[in-house]
Length: 424
Ligand code: 5AD
Ligand code: SF4
Image 1 (cartoon, rainbow, N blue to C red):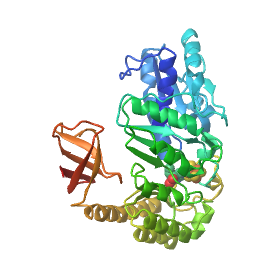
Image 2: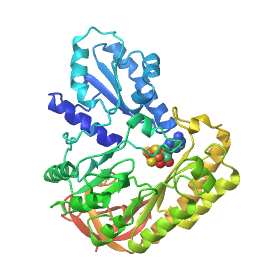
Image 3: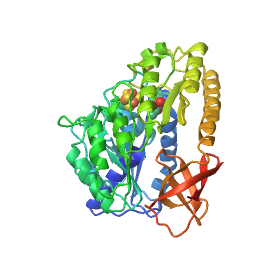
Image 4: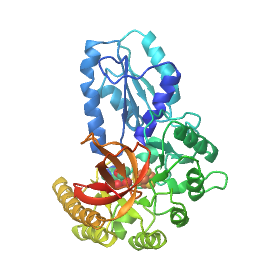
């Protein structure tokens, strides 16, 4: 989501006459887009910002700004902790960036930061096509914000209310991306299943995007068990362009914790969704997000999460230890699982999931499937890198193909999680 937002910011600035540079030294303006979803992401961003203070001391006219969710979450603290900042701009204020920068360029150095961090429930950046430099895959935001208020999550507070983009503008954006060379789009939203526009649902959106000529593949991220509709799996089964891959965060395998998290489903309901989805779309690959060490989680409750991971056999999982986030309901609960215990649970879960992912991958060896070539392999200039429809990374020897082409490849041995393939 943040990568997609950064592309939107690039368009806003390019349209205003700015140019991009890869070099921090050469840049007149440095903008750092930040994430506040977990403490670790926040610390990393704050560390990176702090390291820019040297550049500011050397060249006081350089404008340094921080964008995204951290400005929204803690504007005043940010200005206090990093007094050299020029701009502090939240996720609904990017249209203003050219004016804010111009204003700052004209001002004498040393002024306190300009803070623009109001949420705007109407801001969809609908008319701004994110800057695309010709890659095979592109992100397309279809919803912004979130209304779910999971008790651990800061997103509703920093990204504001859930809103959907008009389907007409989504399609127009996809058409433009295809014209610029994209062959795959990833439809993005905190909860894509909540998509609603003039009576059209997310399944309708998927179908409409898949119908864009020249597009080879459609993916989407993230789904929510409360809003997911089984029709999307029918669309997947009937339409080869819609990739059989689902990222469905479960967060915990224990009903009591799910309730404390305000997730709105039970373990049984989650398992039912997976079962029905696999029945309708048997090729479906599954990934999830899991949090361990949520306040009051007992060892037995954590084991229910391990058990769920074993039952579902996710192809991959993003696993986190709970960290308290400001404004959230869980911040009012006692964070009583010790750090050592959180780390132990996280390591246990990661080790289990690693085994499961490896087994799931080993079962694919020998399979022949379509691979969309995304580009040259980062590790070997004579190989292509691409992915199967179910998102497995594959490298294979080049033989006159071009990026964007779909080829049939037999999956061979694994190096880590990447398959070495052979043209079939
Ligand atoms: N602590 C740990 N993990 C969190 N996530 C969101 N908020 C927190 C938090 N406070 C995780 C969830 C979510 C993913 C994007 O980040 O698993 O699905
Ligand atoms: Fe956060 Fe829950 Fe919304 Fe996901 S669904 S963004 S975890 S509040």
